[in-house]
Image (cartoon, rainbow, N blue to C red; front, side, top):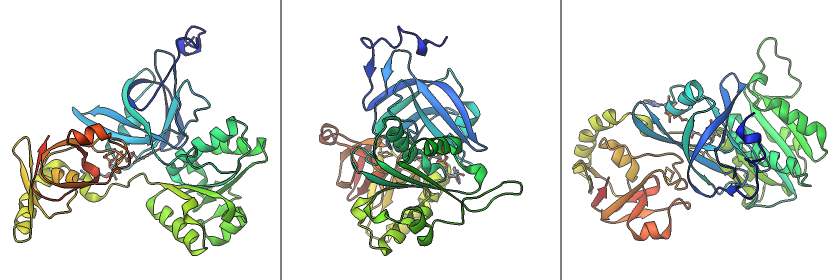
Length: 370
Ligand SMILES: Cc1cc2nc3c(=O)[nH]c(=O)nc-3n(C[C@H](O)[C@H](O)[C@H](O)COP(=O)(O)OP(=O)(O)OC[C@H]3O[C@@H](n4cnc5c(N)ncnc54)[C@H](O)[C@@H]3O)c2cc1C
Ligand code: FES
């Protein structure tokens, strides 16, 4: 019997509750959801209640080929099942971490995670009626919300509209069907771009549009909207709702931060191009960013600090890319900068000179302790 099921393990006196920070967790289960999506469930050896706000994420800290890499993943499970938590990961073609997780992470392995954090969650925006819109693996945060409301017998009126490429790509398909079959306040709609030969499909076809929206949720104007999916999907949803006069203060979205080409080129490529960039920058009004290893680069004021570092071959960790997770923290020993973070750094750290490089722009010559 697994230690997770023993009376001793579940003894409430010994049970702790996790909070935002670094935690060592052990993979306890791997579930193949679709051909390219897996769910990984984690627990810890001492009894722990994994409470978080449905929709929040954790940042994994891994060592792959001798390099420390960090990536953020939404917690797809619900805090209503608090003795473990799950993430659901889609393979990204050529992606370092998603493929590593699929190919290597197995039950029993221990990894470090940071979090849970994230402003995109259903607890900070309570509502009686919600519209959950997701595309592809963007289903993870809204699934956590739906599971939470379902498990807690909440009266929240849920309309869930999920878009996928084909019926075979629908993540959690059977669980969603089960949920919608059990309660009246959960209406499920699936939209597939197409179906493959041999796949029966009786749901919506194509892309979510105004006509579909009116059929799926005729009362959408009265709902709080939570949306997550590829950038192009969220752009289309945002434009559609704006065009229909929806009150956008009731629209909430989560971006998985599709990596711009510049971020993912390897450090050598960046180093090769740094000289060229510096020459081009020489003629303009530039400032200099210098790192502890002596490497420096001339950049135009306003340049992102994390990108400037990469351009000179200094790889600072980066995960969420939006100032929440804290993975990209570095110390500035001198110079002016502007930082627009989303809570990933404390006032004390800022007072000590730390910044989140992903959301810091360079204003003058900077000396970075890194
Ligand atoms: C808040 C948040 C929550 C998220 N939640 C989820 C989730 O629930 N599920 C999920 O699956 N994902 C989620 N993500 C996305 C996740 O963090 C990763 O970005 C994703 O898994 C890809 O990581 P990777 O390491 O596999 O790809 P990366 O290695 O980062 O590569 C990304 C892309 O760049 C290309 N690339 C990589 N290296 C190079 C190179 N040297 N030259 C040219 N191209 C290159 C790759 O081919 C790939 O297309 C979330 C992200 C955020 C910010
Ligand atoms: S990468 Fe998450 S705070 Fe910068």
